[in-house]
Amino acid sequence: MLDVLNFSIPGKPEYIQMLRLAIGSIAGKSGFDVEKIEDIKVAVAEACKLVTCHGRDGLSAKYELTVEIEDGRMQITVSDLGSGHTIEKYCQQCTHCPEDGDLAIFVMDSLMDETELFSNENGSRSIKMVKIR
Image (cartoon, rainbow, N blue to C red; front, side):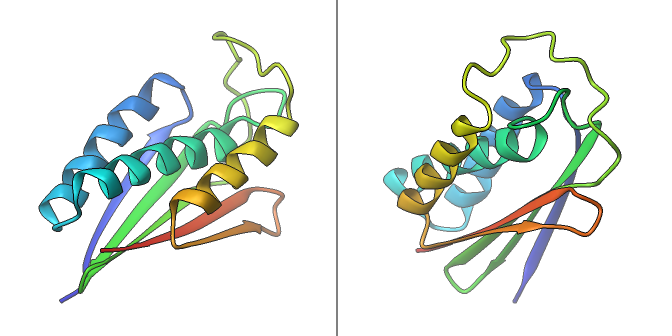
């Protein structure tokens, strides 16, 4: 049976830790081992940063994270909702943007079984990642 969970998040960096914890809990309840849970948590954090920040002047006003779980397979999609990058980067500025985004893609590729980056028609980004138990 397919379970789908949706999160709608303001682009503020302080919410990434909350998502890491939530996704880790979901992965644990879905039967993933500790090592794979850590891989998923790191990949989710990198995806959130890439979608909301890297290569932009501000942070995304809002983005969405969707988790689909079915038969030992977890698919996570992180999507910028295209509402603009209007939140000021009041935390640490990206030091090597957008090169940091290239590193994020490498990290996600190495930790997840599948990773796809999409550029949407409105200029926003989406990332789909899959981890198999």
